[in-house]
Structures are given as structure tokens and as C-alpha cells.
Length: 226
Image 1 (tube, rainbow, N blue to C red):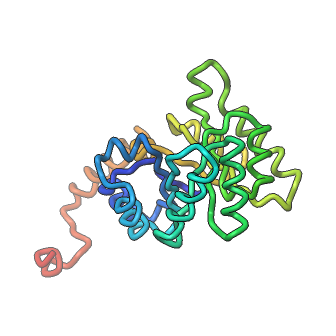
Image 2: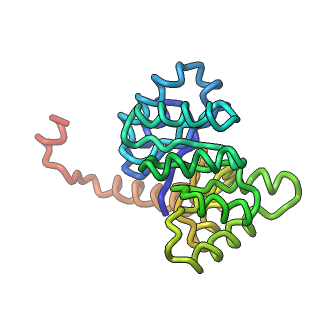
Image 3: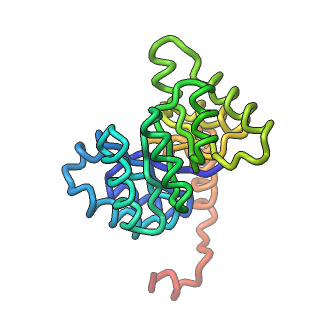
């Protein structure tokens, strides 16, 4: 499974990119507004930091304007994935851009039927929102299971399932077991994946036991230089 982070905070992106665990970034108008940055310049900077796909969303809703915005966004960097809404106009834009070789992320997916349409339109990624479904009393992970099952029946479909609106590590693990290709999550959730109380307890014990030996792995001259 590939890990994307869902943020427009460049400092967070740089920090997590340094771990080698980051495969891409997703942004949206709300995240960009929160950052207070110029959108186009921010996308360029993120693309310089992250070699994988960086989703940049169009702001318009009609076909002609979305297509113009999408074509422009695609010129910002080779790893831009143009993000479009799952609407009739958005899918038309998806088809046009994907036919021209541009990566497209179709967002705001809430049903398996919508996901099938996006795949037929040539989407590189489909973004089902599990957390938002959970918020209204539906089971978001059931949608991921349905989409993965449907896509698996048709090997000619290249669209990757990008699980979005992730709220906790359980969403990620369940999606991975279902075979979803990508999970995009807030930086805080990615960091939660490291955490387990037994890891902390075990490390504390190892450190304490090592201190009792009075030893150093590095030669004294090397340790002093460090």
C-alpha cells in the first residue's frame, strides 16, 4: 500500500518525506485555504519535495473552466495529478485529461457506482471518503470493500483505490487488508502508525539495561567527535 498525506503544510510534507515512507500528497481547496499560501507556488514546491503524485484540485465546476484549470495544473510539474469532482462534467474532464496522459484523481466518491464510472473515464485514482460516510451513520469501509471487489473483476481497469477521509489507523489497516492501493491521511494519523505502548516499554527496558553495562558501541574517540 502506498502512503499519501493529506495536507498543504509544506513543513509537515518535508518532515515526512525525509522518512522515506511518503509516496505522494493530496491537497484540496480547504487545505490550501488553511495554509494561507499561493496555490500555484505551493503546488510547485510540494512537487519539488515529493517525487510521487501530488493531487492539485480544480476550483471550477463547469467543464470548460475545469478543463482549462486542469491543463494548466498539469504543466506545473510532471508529478501533478489533477483532482476533479465526481460529477458529469468532472468525469468528462477526467476522460479528456487522462487520454492526454495526465494523471487524474477523481474525488468525492461515495458509492461503488460512482467508482465504476470514474474507472471507465480513465481515472488514475478514485478517492472514496470513508470518514465522511462514517459521520452520517454508514460504514465507509464497506464501500472500499465493494470498490476493490468490483475493480478486481476487470484486470483492464487501471484505476487505483485511494482511500480518503481517513480518521484513524484502523481505517488504514482495514483498507490494506481489502487490497486498496493507496491511503491518504493527515500527518498525525501517519505518525500514529508508529505508536504502540509495548514498543515504548521494551525500548525503555533496553536503554536501562544497556546503561548498566557502562559500555559504548562507538570507540571513545568517535563518540566524543560525534
